[in-house]
Image (tube, rainbow, N blue to C red; front, side):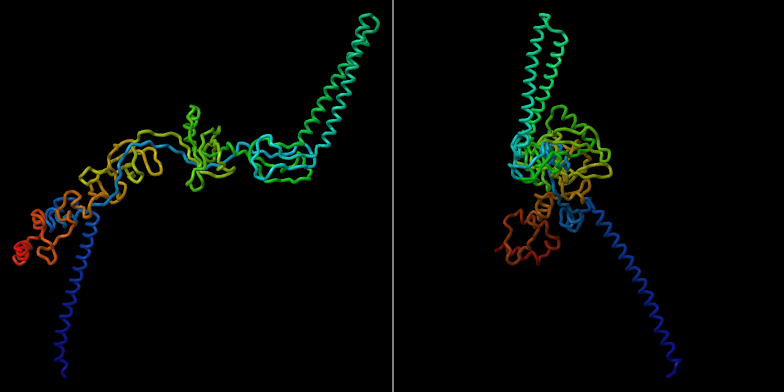
Length: 474
């Protein structure tokens, strides 16, 4: 085969391939540019929905058609009505239950424990007998002190009789005055001795009384720390029993220093502020009391002031050293405009809410000023009137003037919204005239509505109008 004859054929094959490769590159670049432009347009369209009613109505469905409604979709939201109500201003804190009195009962005299008359955990009253100590040695000491007093009193009586006799003799000038003065001094000495004897007798009687250990305060007795037969004394560290007063009982908690002035004014003005003690989970109220007092200085490490509330604790629900959640009712704001907390939003210019514009199914952005708040309600100090409806759910997707769908509206939004086509009010479904198994229109208005919603080519087609005429003839 001649190589020269093959050369032109090879060159002819290579040239079209180069042209095809260049053309494919150009087409691929154009397709990439078009795809990039389409993606950008779609992103802009999704982030900047058209709100122009004219552009919406110019869609394929005509005025009020489904295509126009799809171009400006309404947002389903939740609403609430601003109302006037009384809002309590509650200060919450963590408190510790503190008994008014905690007494460690120790014996006043040393001796052998003879009886223990209380049970562990028993409620006792002030003056109840708790235990007794062997009293015999104290009885002997009392007898000794009594005998000493009686002897000195007898000597005092004898000295007084002698002094009276000496005074009579002095009047008769039968005795020297020095003897009279000496006898008078002896009488005074014996009088002092009798006073000392009476004090010793009283101390002995008091020590004998201390052998009966009684409760100094009312409360609950703790666990027993000593048994019968042990020698006890006033120097024992554990004592005989520990009594804690449970009713009434106090709760100590810390409040911010900014609230101290208002609480002090309320307490000084005689205003009884209600305090509630809740359990750890805040699900149950253990007891209700009143605010008692404030500390006299601010804790510089925490910037708080200690406060105390007093509870009757009749049900014994509060236990000493227990941690509780405290709710202090500082005051109550009467007749305030309140909305749910979820309705209030915060922007760069301040707080605002979305207000529903009557029956237009649109919203307006309204700047407001907030006040005190509770768990689920917040006071609107200005910018909102009672009776106006605000958006509570779905506000993240709204802007000023946006369309909305309320929870009571029908699905589809057109029939229940701003006056869409009649087809949406019929459930959003059209039935083909003359279709098999389809009932005829019950009224002329329904037929006119169906004809108005039908496309132009469908209504003008003789072939498609024939089933309708047959249905009318039948």
